[in-house]
Image (cartoon, rainbow, N blue to C red):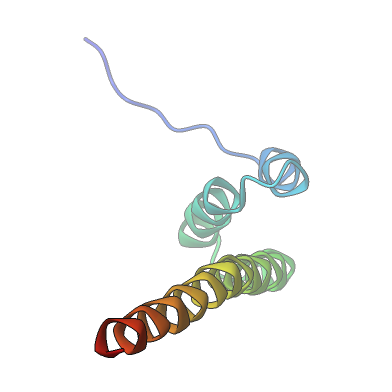
Length: 84
């Protein structure tokens, strides 16, 4: 008989978070919170990692938006040149 057992620890979540694996750290913190909902230290750690994850997503958008604006300006200039 095989049974899937999950073995997560707070230390594992911290290691993942320190390595930049924020999604995995969130997964572990959420799992631990499901098992021990009264652990405010885990809830605080989860909030901190989720905040970092949110900031990371925002930081990833800035270069994309800048590149999009640059290409849009070039496109507009090409359209103006076609009219000449």
